[in-house]
Image (cartoon, each protein chain N blue to C red):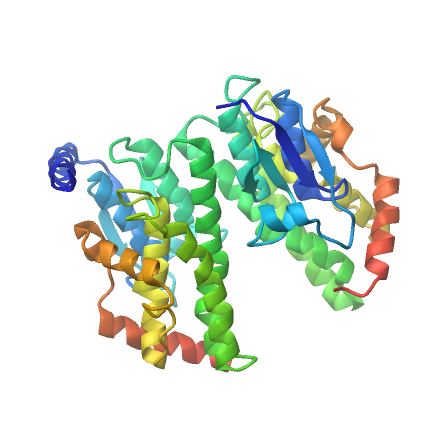
Length: 239
Length: 227
């Protein structure tokens, strides 16, 4: 069944490419917020122009398209510009109906939105920034981060993906943020944050993610990202 | 889908709790309001929102939904056939409604809170400047979203109206405490007109805290050292 649905996606992707939708994505290679948008565009088979941004010396284009936050990613479609990765994912889901990303059921959707907010607003900062700063010592920082991962462990138990049988909104948010972003900082610091014996379900989920072609295409190169995260950590420590 | 008992765990003074209450009123959905005692958290709250332990929590047939804006959207979708839509139908307009709602919580409300905390002339000036910058953005957003109609959502109150409107009582309390007009007809005429319409709406009136009562409550909670 998995093989047939994968074949379907390849066919749909080709059909979309022929239509030539005018989509641009302003992003940064190491940004999990950018990478998750790329996952969504690839899942839907939407061709796009990727415009790599310098996030230190921001381009006039970026400042014009996201004047409020001045951040990546920004999606440009039919002359409209949409910032904020969660909003972009939902916009993509509502504009291109094939391969739905968000659950249809209102309750399931509310849960996906809730956990996605949790990942970006708590897990990300506690799992990275707080560990780098380790204000109460590294052991406490790791314990506090692991408490949050326990919630996610529970959520993914018994499922191939957070979205169920296939990749969904929460998988893209958590996947881009955790294994393919902050985990690279743990590796750089020599920390085993989510060991297999303590987090068997999350580790299984990560294995499942790595087997999905569109996810693999959106993983930043490992060594380069470990170096990048080290630099970010230095900036955080000296701030 | 829309069947099942509805309960809302909350508190009368919380702007975040006011949001789902307005939404439920707009959809004519009866619910049981479970008021939390200030300073303590009930077993039900801790069980229903173990991650954040915060109000509001909507319980629909005992299934919890947390985070005020997420609850409002859930209400809109679950009782979609009742009353007008709370969110726009076009994907871009929906994204903009959500964008501004997030901005209101992450930037605008933070600036409002900082208003009372600010000490000294320099800090006060900086906070005022930040707050007024935000107001200018929202004034423009209102003009863009409303397209000449009375609300951000058009003819009827919607998600973004609820998101900003829920802070109006606290804004008034802050104006009294700081002796400063935070929503000025001269600077943000559209927002002022909108605020008037919002506060007078029958879905809003019963759940909007009275300014005097809220001011008294604010004195009480800000007198205590922050936990």
